[in-house]
Structures are given as C-alpha cells and as structure tokens.
Amino acid sequence: MTEPDWLDEREQRAWRGYLALHAEIQRRVARQLLRETGLTAAEYAVLVSLSEAPGGRLRVFQLRAAAEWEKTRLTHQITRMAARGLVAREPCVDDPRGAFVVLTEAGWDAVNNAAPRHVAHVRHWFFDALQPDQVDALIEISRTVLARLPEADRVMGEPCHEDAGACGPGLIEAVDLTPTEACDPAPTGCDDGLP
Amino acid sequence: MTEPDWLDEREQRAWRGYLALHAEIQRRVARQLLRETGLTAAEYAVLVSLSEAPGGRLRVFQLRAAAEWEKTRLTHQITRMAARGLVAREPCVDDPRGAFVVLTEAGWDAVNNAAPRHVAHVRHWFFDALQPDQVDALIEISRTVLARLPEADRVMGEPCHEDAGACGPGLIEAVDLTPTEACDPAPTGCDDGLP
Picture 1 (cartoon, each protein chain N blue to C red):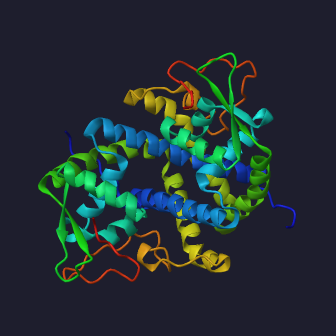
Picture 2 (cartoon, one colour):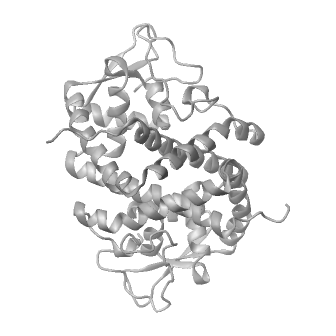
Picture 3 (cartoon, each protein chain N blue to C red):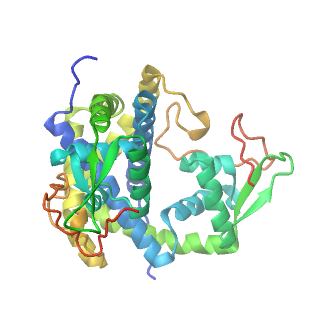
C-alpha cells in the first residue's frame, strides 16, 4: 500500500465539522419532536414518506428505498406503528408476496400535527444560524458531491441500486415514490412480504 | 398554533440535500470499509476513539460521550468487539462501578489497517468532488451552526450535557477524551459498569 494520503488540517476540520453538524442537529431535532409529539425520528420519517405518496400508501420496498432501511428494521418499525394505529397493512392482491403500508386517520393526524413542529425545530437549530449565501453554498456542496456519486461508484466498483434512487442524476431530488395502483411486483430481490 | 413557517424552496433543497449528502456518503464509506476490513462503521468509531486516547484506553462513559451512543448499544458493541479480540475490558480499581475499555494488539492492528483505507474512501466520495472554496464554506457552515447551539438550546430549554461535549464553545473541536489514570469516578448519572 502506498503512503496514505491523510486529510490535511483543513479537510479534517471540514469532515469532523460536517459529522458533528449532522449528529448535533439530528439529535436535537429528534429529541424535541419526541418530546412534543411522542414520535421518534424513525416514525416521523415513515409518516412523511407515506404522506407524500398518493393515497398515503406505499409498497414496503418503496418505503425501504426512501428510508434506506434494512428490511428487518423497517418490518419491526411498521409492526410497532400498526400497533399504535398510525399505519395499517394492506395485502397486495396482484402480488401475494407484496404488501402496502397505508396511513390511517390517526397517522394523518400525527403527521399533520408533527410537520409544522419539525420544520420549526429545523429552522430554530439550523437555518436561523445561517446566512442566505451559506444556504446557497450548502445546496451547491450537496449537489456537487451527489452528482459525482455515480462516477465515483463506478470507479470503486460500487453496486448500483436503481430502486434506492442511488444511481444516475437527480439524487438530490426526492426519490420518486409514486406507487403503482396495480401492485407491480417488487423489483427482483426486493421481497417486501411482511410476517 | 400560528401559521407554520414552512421552509421555502431554497431551504427545502438545502435541507434535503444535506440529509441526502450525509446518508449517501456514510452508506458508501461504511460499506466499503466493511468490504475491505470486515469492520462496521460502529466498530471503527470505537477503535478510532480508543486509538486517539493515551494508552488506547478510555472509560466507558467517555467512549459513550464520544460516540453519543446509548449505554445498552455501546455495551453490546463492546461485548462483540471483546469477543473478537479487538478490545479488552479492565476493571477500574478505584471505582468498582467503573470500567476501562482498552485496545488490544489486534485492535491496534485493525485500526492502523483501516484508517488509511477509510481516509481514502472519504477522499474518493467526498473531497474529490469539492473545490477548496467549498471545503472552506463547509467549515464555516458547521462552525456557524455549532457555535450557535448553546444559545439555541437555552431558548428551547434543551438540557445541557457537559460530558457529551454538547455545551459551550468548541463543539467543532474533537471532544477532549483524555482519560484519567487515577480512575476518577464517572460524572453523576454516568454509571459505566459493564455486565
């Protein structure tokens, strides 16, 4: 192995600062949301993904792609949320292995109540500290790094996960989660059957 | 509740881009490290924290503060790593409730082998995409948001966790993890006894 190309002092500060920024903000925003609404960050993420999908329903594999969660973790998450009445499971008639997750009325109420609070927390801890040109710089930094990922992945031999929205351009855009009413089978290897 | 102060389109792009940036980079860097070294991101984080401490040893509560982990999760993590021979536990003679975690020779080898690879991955997926002025902007963004956290916490009534390095200035700096050879007792409420 050649001599390691260590990060210089500036790069170290940028990397550690970026990691600390994410950890500190997420921790506060998650804790405040839990305090005010009783929802964990993971529950809120599921509710938001569902609320942005037509009819408030998604196939499990689409939810997994949106949250980048492992199947087991998401399955447990959905089980707990169904027990609390926030979501319901619906079988997929055209695809016996498939399942939909649907927002219940209580789920809609929960996300509608939580969303303005979550935005207020993000604004309080994050945007209120930043100048407009810093917001623009952040957009540009994310856009630049994300746009280069497909090429960087290819060089590194990273597998390409089409269904996770991790390939091709447009990574910075929200993953297209439009569910198909017709219960299209999940992509190969995306078994989303729930126990 | 007053009318929610929703994020405008620019703020939405900044927030979603920042979240996507973190998720996509961490996922790739973690997966590549696992592939090349067999270490998970969590294991690597523990090894790095220990390797940066004098003598490669830390009290459990210091390790928890550095990683911001819950006690249960860290306890399981250390148990698994001890079983693999990467770390060892040492009782704290002056504090029967306390324990040290120490890097073993295999642990030192593992972190020395992994560190240059990890840096290469961070460089490949992150820094190679950025211009020097973007690195500077990122330092400034993190510094600005982190520096304002104590005030933002106070306004929000957020509890202050001195031991987690979450209070006062200097958040962006590495948390001071200098262990005390004399086995000072853990701060109140920081019981770090291991089962």
